[in-house]
Amino acid sequence: MTVETLAPDALSVASVGDGPREFAGWQRVLQRILAKTPALYDGLTTEGIGAAIGAVRDRAEEIDLTIPTASGPHKLRVKPVLGPDGDVHAVRLWLGSAAAAAPMLPAAVGAIWDLDSQTIRLPADIVRLPGVSAEEYVPRMSIAELFHRVSTFDRHAEVLDLLYAPQPGGKLQFDVTVTDGSGRPGRWRITMRVRDDDKARGAWWLIEDVTSEQVPSAAPTLERIGLREAHRRAGTHLAVVQLARTSISHWLTDPAPWIRWDYLFRPVDVFHPDDRARLVELGDRLRSGDSAGVTVRALNYRGDYTPTSLLLYPYPGFSNRKLAIAQLVRVADDVPMLEPHRDALERHRSSVAIGYDEQLRHWLAGRMKHSPVG
Image (cartoon, rainbow, N blue to C red):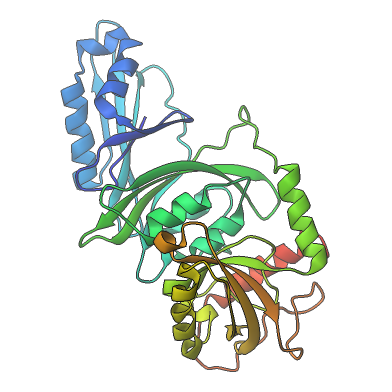
């Protein structure tokens, strides 16, 4: 059983085995588990296990107890799941006979969505989960990068609502399918709660590896495949843009190949600093239901900027979400596109580092191997 501790007053069940529990009360779930093993009632109580959960949460140290029962000794193992700052984002429990070998628990880590920087802070242990190799690991990732790594997912709007417009008590749980560099599918369960305190302004996350051979990954729908292929052949590039914070939140099609939007220290750096205010100003027009066009400078893979035309449409519910659907068209012709036979990331003309270049090179190399045009 995995108990999330994502907020100071939170203590609920995220998962039991591979199954989600979506913030169920931990006492009720625990009592159901104990009822299946009556012998455990000889030496365990819900109150005692709750005290063990609290101790692990507060001390970030594992507890391993042997409990005598009428049916022989049993084990209680309680382990913390740590986030990027060493705080406990969840506690995992295993109960069973001392004679039985405790199973190897799938990997799990904590993460933090930082609203001010618009990045997900990740611990180094994220590489234990499928979908992130050691060569690709970075301590911060944009939400657009996370979305780009997952497939068969359609709850983007819910996630963006929670992250960009956090409300007290906001919480969400969902599963996503990820693919590693060799094309092997895996599955993550992400549980998140809004926070606004000295630990975070944004949300704390719990990411669990729930990959299972018994639960096949859902295949993309024919509609999704057909629309994406149609846009690819037409050379159309569509993205969801967070206007108030001037960043790309999600690609609805293949990413525009002349724009460096990934592996940046700051997602806002995708647009030139002098153009960001113009994007913010377009919010009033979109709020009234109108479309709007603007040409901005978008960061490219050489480290300078390519003039890019954006035709913006209001996202459904724009007044609340501040999200726009943008069609991006490359204006300049002198900047190379991403091509399989080129080194996509040339030396920056600027002496100031803007992102994680070594990891980007590795990611682009893998992307080119699996590109449908490669």
